[in-house]
Figure 1 (cartoon, helix red, strand yellow):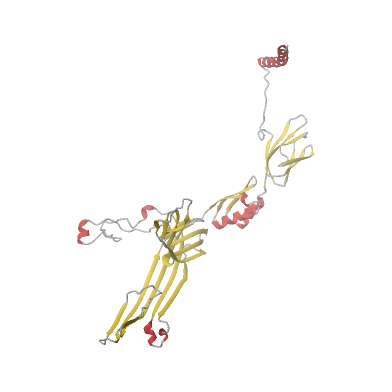
Figure 2: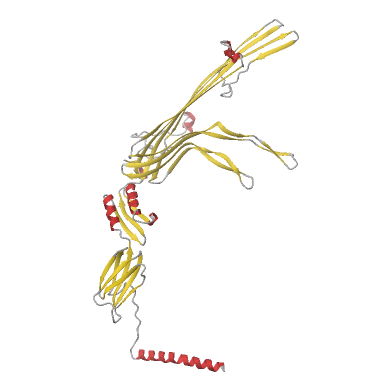
Amino acid sequence: MFRSIAIAVSLMLSAPLVSQAQSLADNNERGNTMQVHIRAPGVGPVSETLNLPLSKAAVIHLPVDAADVLVTNPEIANAVVRTPTRAYVLGMSVGQTNVFFFDGDGQLILDLDIRVERDLAPLQEALIRFLPDSRVTAEAMNDHIVLSGSVPSASAADTALRIAQRWSADPEHVMSMLSIEAREQVMLSVRIVEMQRTIVRQLGINLSTAGSSGEFNFAVATQNEFSLVGRFLNGLSAGVDWTSGNPGGITGVSSLLQAMERVGLVRTLAEPTLTAITGESANFLAGGEFPVPVGRDRDGNVVIEYKSFGVGLGFTPLVLSEGRISLRISTEVSELTTQGSLTLSSTAVTDDAGNIIGTVPGLTIPALNVNRAETTVELPSGGSLVLAGLIQEETRQNLDGVPGVQNIPILGALFRSRDFESQETELVVIVTPYLVDPANPNGLSTPADGLQNADEASALLFGRINRVYSVPGSDTGEQSWNGPVGFLFE
C-alpha cells in the first residue's frame, strides 16, 4: 500500500521535470538557446566610480527617469531621489558600496561604485604650507592615513607625522612611509681621559723600654698602627737602642722611626669610534665583567650575574638635517676596588646528626669606583663637545697614639703616628660626530697589513719579533700605509 503511493508521488513529481527537460532539448535542437547573463558591479557601459568624501554629498543627473533605486549598504552611502532624473548621494561612513538606478522597464540606467573616504585635501594643503621643501602625499586607506614621498631630514618626517595625527581620531591609524634624503649614518669619535693622583704619607714612632726591680722584670712598648692604609708601606725605618750594664732599674731603651710617602699617578685613555644609523643605539666597552651571586634557584644552585666595568660608551644619534645631529650620550669609567666590597665568611655544612661534612668557602664581592656622565646635545657634523669638570677629591687622615701621653706638648709626638691619604680624580670626555658614507674596502688598511714575523736569524741576532714596516714613499717594496682608514666624512 505505502510503496504504491510513493511510486505514484515520484511519477507525479518527475513528470513535469521530464517534460521541461524535453522542451529545453527541443528548443536547443531548433536553435532557440536560453542564456543566463550575470553582470559584475562596476563593469559595463553604464558603470561609474565615485570617490565621495566623508560627511559630504554628490548630485547625480540621470539621462532618463528612474523608477527604482537600490543601495547595497545604506550605512556607508545613502541615495535620496528628489526628481526622476536627479538624486543625491550622501557619504555616511568610511567604506565601499554601490548604487543601482533602473528605469520603468527594469533596464539599468547607472551602476555607481562608491568609495567613501576622509577628505584629505586640507591635510595636503597643511603639509605643503608647513613643509615647503618636502614632497609628502597623504592618502586615505579605509580609516587610515598613509604618508608617502620624501623629506630632507628626520625632523621634517616627524613634523609630517605629527600633523597627520591631528587629522585622525586615533594616532595609531597614521602610517608613515616617508624616505629621508639626508645621510643617516653617524660616526661618533670619542676620547675619554681620566687622571688619578694618589698621595699617601705615614709617620710614626715606636718606643720600648725594659728594666728590673729586685726579682721583678718589666717592659713597656708602644706599637702604633697605620689604620688608614692598613699597614706600613715599607718606607724609612730607623731605630736607636740603648742598653745599660746596671743589673737594676732600666736596662734598655729602643726607639723606631717609620716614615713613608707615596705619590701615584694613573692615566686612563680610550678612543672608541662607533657608527650607528639614525635612531639606533651603539655601545662600547673596554674592560671586563665580574660575577655577582644574586640568589639561588629551586635546586639550591647559586645564580650568577655578570656586572661590567671599565670604559663604557653608549650613544643614540638622530639626524635632524645635514648640519644638525641630536646625540644622547652616556659614558662611564669604572674600576674594581676593595673599598665597600662585600665579604662572606666560610660556613660549615652539617648533616642531620650535626656532624660536619664539608665547608663552603668564603666569598668576596668587589665594589666599583664609577665616574659616569649622561647628556643629550645637538651638534653639527664635525663639531666637538667636551664633558669636563668631573673632578673628585677625597682626603683622609688619621692619628693613632697612646691615650693621655700623646697630648703632651712636644713629647707627645713620640707616642703617636699619623696616616694621611689623598685621592684626586678628573674625567674629560671629548665627543665628535660625523655624517659618513661607506668607503671602498680596497682603500682601507688595518694594523695587521704588512705584518710579518721575523725569521730565526733576526730574532736571535737583533732581538726582533716582527719585520719593520716601511715608511710611505720608500722603495723597499714592503707594505706602506695609505689612508684614510675607516670612513670618509665631511
